Amino acid sequence: MKAMLVALMAAAISAAAPVSAGSVTASPLAGHWSLDVGTLPMPPQMRPKRVDLQFRAVADGKWKTHVEIVDQADKTLYSDSTLSLDGTPGQASGTYWVDTCAAKMPAPNVLVMQFAYQGAPTSTRVYSLSEDGKALTETEAYFKKDGTPAMRTAVFTRVPGTS
Image 1 (cartoon, rainbow, N blue to C red):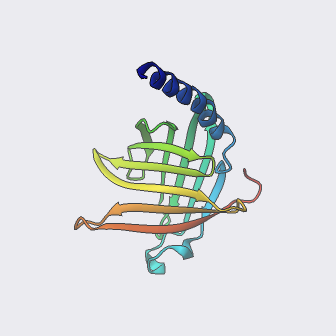
Image 2: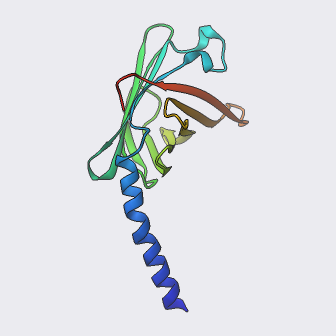
């Protein structure tokens, strides 16, 4: 019985590996996305002027993310990371408040990322693609300063000519 369980586990792991690796290169999330800032649940004067996301598959089944945020004062913040999609933490660089992150892609049209800054967790974000492939919804889960859990949803649209 134990040998059968081990064999089944080995078969499941080996069968899942190609699907997982293949989903990275075939993910419809790859491309350049721009935030519809009007979808942010905050007063217009508090919203950034622009937020762009760029996702792409790179060598060794890794996923590269570039984020660029232009605030109301025209200051640009950015973050870059290249991660394995197995949940292993990796480094992020840039001027945005994230220095460590982890990612998983449970389906080709869904990306889950966790962020930390200076050793403290900051947020978890789930990116999900609409059926028509034109809208990317970001659901962010985080904690307010008083410890209360909160969530925010934003909608990105694909920049024409990217995929």
